[in-house]
Amino acid sequence: MKNLLLTSPSNIRYLSNFTGSKAVILKLPNKTYFFTDSRYFEEAKKIIPPIFNLQIYKKGEFKDEWQKILKKHRLKEIHFEANHLTYSALKYWRKISRPVKLKPQTGEIEKLRTKKSAQEIRLLKKSQQINEQVFYTVKKHLKTGITEKEIAWKIQETAHKLGCDELAFPPIVAFGKSTSIPHHKTGPGKLKKGDMILIDMGVKYKGMCSDMTRTLFTAKPTSEQEKAYQTVLQAQKNAIRKLKPGITGHKAWQLAAKIIDSDHFTHGLGHGIGLDIHESPSLAEKSKSKIKEGMVMTVEPGLYLPNKFGIRIEDMGVLRDKFENFTKAQKELKDCIVEV
Ligand SMILES: [Mn+2]
Image (cartoon, rainbow, N blue to C red; front, side, top):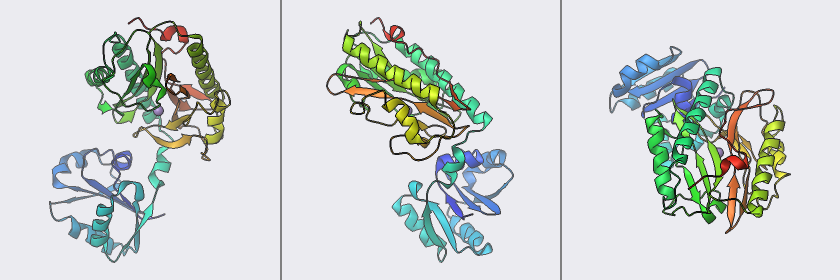
């Protein structure tokens, strides 16, 4: 096993439960060090599992502590997290670690994170339950004249009231034509009678993210809209029904892509979710990674007609021998028409 220098907050939290802002883990094959400064001593002592060798240093004395450990283990090289270290931070680490070589790696800890524990699954499900409570509360505020930003703010406020840590990502709220942009930037647009509405939202509860998208109608859908909606819904249901352990991310994507014309389905089918909103595996056209039992993921096909409208329906759940859906929010077309 490699010697790992871990600086990603999510990876640190995953291994140690620590949520403070200042910590570094040095993971060696037979010993794991946890470095934090004296401000976090009390918290670290309480929550860091005993397997960690806790190294508390005073401000300004980290370098000496670090070098002592490198010498003690006669390390030759350490692998840093290429996706989680800035260039200037790397220069610092190289300087204080000399003559030990620093080499990049990606995914060592992320790999462990793909299969969720029973506790993580419980929290992810709970996170999505709260997300739906937020959604149903906010839905009542959909009235003509309200702006996308005001709805986004209601989501934030309601999540806070319901005890969430924070949002999992800034919500996407799109009215009318803006629904045709898959990642529309929530703006000042006002809701008009007849607009379609797309809301993509997620909360963080005890560190765990949720993610859901619903597309709503404020008037009877046109036949084009209805046809598009039923296509996306059918594609999503087909994927949910047929997801099973062992298939590749590509195969999973195809379950929906063969139903929606690929010119209009312009993104992946879904993604792993956990401490981070986007984790492995990727359920996408070019993904060769296999989906496995115990992984928690989203299923979110979409269909976008530029300058007209867009539709996305997103649920999340855990893969057992089949996909167990956490998302209960209604998605049949008749239940997605709102009075504004
Ligand atoms: Mn998503």
